[in-house]
Length: 560
Image (cartoon, rainbow, N blue to C red; front, top):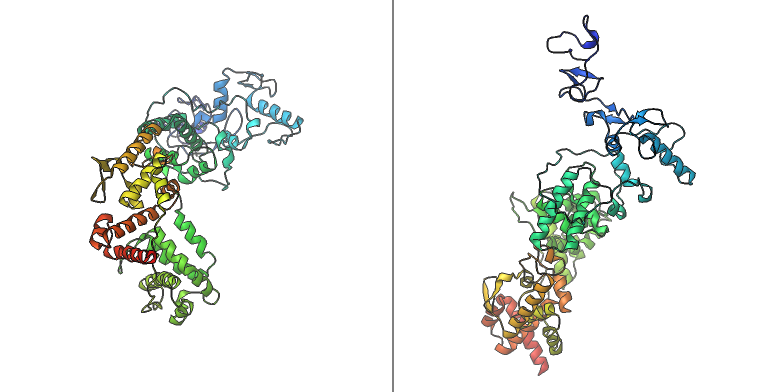
């Protein structure tokens, strides 16, 4: 149904009884077809129904009120080849390239040349022209080999000396649904085409440069992150929408940095975090082989352990390490029960006693894991009774702290590597906890004193010299880093996080806890087991201090 010709008319132009029946051209785009109302055509009118149309130059279908009735590919073709002439291939008056062909005839000639070279014809041409769905040129470029792409495609220029200017940008508020879920080939991300929205790419590159200056990035890292941002914008299913974290994860399989890129996108508020936590993936892989009902009950336990519960009985969320330890201890028993039982409701006290060891660490760990599961399921009314209640698990034997050879200690604190020497000095002289080593800030070391966890530790001269040498090395290696922590490495220097335990142990060549334990045992021998002094010096509880005192007495009696 067509609307009336204008506000005072009763009929449309085609049904008028008097006057001209030829509608005027659209006053916005100049189109002489699909006139709607108010001097505008159906494509330009705000309230006109949105019907699909075809491009007048290449007959590509799928135009919906955009581009003045011309697809993006033809608009780009006409921009690069201005003017119109008679095409010798099809006989139409269109924009011709340097070879004297219009766009469709040029594509047909290119396909024929591929077929002559023995290559597979991607357009399956027999006769005539190959038609397309509009605005899929950008998508097709992602799956076209670089050697077969058009030669006029400009490469991505990320090392330009021109500084991008900050500008405002607006993200798309919709998501384009995909017809098929295809797995992306991450090996070809480095050769992605240009982003569809250059203004958005330039705005994000400005954010990258500003972020790089704030955190002291090198020029190579800044260029790599700028290139990664342009690649992510080019492979989006919905151009201009927030970038998903799963798409950023594809960069880990390439030479482009994923972590710094995610930091920049998070700063620009354009990151959509859809990553599945590692603990969730690990849990699902462990319960996949269990019966469905038993796995469903374990998911209830997992949700309460990870997220906590505000309804009685209330529980605080537990750390991922605690969840992993409990399930790892109970999983062999659960797999054994899965052969004869479909649900944990069928488990009684006899089954618990059967699977528990007589004594030792294995009995303690297994019963703690099972008790954690059954206690939560009983509180959530998933089972009727808790079969682990009133079962004594016993006391597990603690490990005995051991001393370290003096030659190894001397090698660590006199190491030519400033990082290793500073770490070892803090552990050997003051027995700092490994957790405290990770989180020591630059402002915590001042006036020859170390301030950690509310304690003030006067540093030894050797420790002060070691930290001074490390700070000199840190300033030369990462002069512009904004990381507030004392110890940084190649990864954390570009960010603000702390180093990992594995990095500290790798630098020392041994476990940091072993050096701390050797320092505590040395103090036990020097003070003859003074519990009060051990607790004050190292921040230990009475029970923990007694463990070191007992170990020191055993080693001393063995030496005598």
